[in-house]
Amino acid sequence: MDFLSIDVGTILFTLINTGLIFLAFKLILFKRIDAILEQRQQEVDGTYQKADAALNAANSDKEEYAQKIAGAKEEADAIIKRAEKVAQKQGDSILEKARHEAQAVREKATLETEREKSLAKAELQGEISELAMELAEKIMEKEINKADHERLIDDFIQNIGEQS
Amino acid sequence: MSISDFLRGSPDGVDVSGPKIVCSFDVGGITIHLTETIVLSWIIILAVTLLLLWLTSDLKTKDISKKQAVAEWAVKTVYGLVEDTMGKRWRWFAPYIGALFTFSILGSLISMLGLRSVTADFNVPLTWALITFVLIHGTNIKTHGFGGYLKGYVDPVPVMLPINILSEVATPVSMSLRHFGNVVSGMVITSLLYYALSVVTAKIGIAFMTIGIPAVLSLYFDLFSGFMQAFIFIMLTMVYISNADGNAET
Image 1: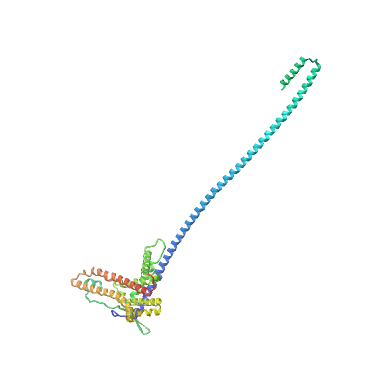
Image 2: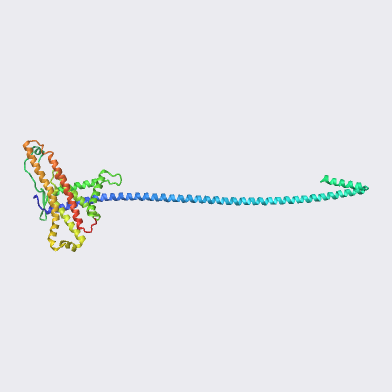
C-alpha cells in the first residue's frame, strides 16, 4: 500500500473495528462497572435506611419508656392517694365505732349504776322499815320513857350508821 | 532485521512504507485488501476484550480487588471527563470515548512491539474523524432542526457560506491529519535514527549507539506522542460535539 492513501476497505474495516471495541467497552467494562456501582450505591442506601430506622425505633422506644415511667409514677401516686383515703376512711370509721361503743358502754354503766342505786335505795328502805318495825316492837315491849326514847332513837341512828 | 544484523549494524537503507497487504480477496468483483492495519486492529481488539473481561471478572461491592479498583477508576475517570467537557446528559457517550482513547493509544504504542502503528495508516484516524464529523452534524441537526442546521451555514451573513462549509470540512481533515502526522513523523524519525545509529555501529563495529538512545527517543515519539494524540483526539471530539449541541448544560 502507499504511504498515504485512502482505502475504502480499510476505512470500512476500521469502522467495524471501532464499533467492536466500542461494544467491548460498553457491554463489558461500562455495563459491569455501572452495575456494580449501582449495587454498591443501593447497599449504601440500604445501610443508611437501616441505620435511620434503627435510630427512629430507638427514639420511639425511649419516648415510650419515658411515657411509661411517667404513667407508672402517676399510677403510684394515685394508688398511694387511694390507699391514704381508704386508710383515712377506715380510721374514721374505727374511731366512730369506738366512740359509739364507748358511748354505749358509758350509757350502760350509767344505767347499771342507776339501777343499783335504786336497788340499794329499795333495799335500804326495806331495812329501814324493818328496823322501824323492830323499833316499834321494842317500844311496845317496854315502857317507854323519855330517856329510853331518846336512847332508842340514838341506837337506831347508830345502827343505821353502822349498817350503811 | 535479525538480532545479529542489529548488533552488527545493518545499513540496508531506510524503509518507510505504507501498511503491507497481508492478503487480498475478491467480493463481488471488488478487491478487498486485508492490510497490516486491519490485522493489528483485530489483535488490539482481542487483547482489549480479554483485558476488559479479566478486569471485570469477579466484581464485588465490598473488599474489592486491585484490578476492580483499576476498572472502577477507569470508568469513573472517563465519566468525569465526558461530564466535565460535554455535560451530564452526554454521559452515555463515555464508552465511545473510552474505546476511542484506548484504540488510539494501543494503535500508536503497538510500534513499541516492533509492529507498524495502526494509527500510522491515514485511513484509521480518518475513519475516527469521519465518525466525529457525522456525530457533530447529527447532533447539530437534532438540536437545531434541519432548517436551523442549514441556517447555521449562512450565519452571521450569507457571504460566510463558503467559509463555513470550508471550516466544517476542515474539521475532520485537520483532526485526522494531525493524528496521522504525529504518529507517522515519529515513526519516520525513529526509522531514520535507527538507520543512522546502525550506520555508526557498522563503522565502529560495536553496538553501543543503538542501545539506549533509541529508547529515550522512543519514550517521546511513541509513548508521549501516542498518549497526547489520543487525548487530543478525544478532547476535540467531545468539544466539537458538545459545541454542536446548543442545549448542553455546562
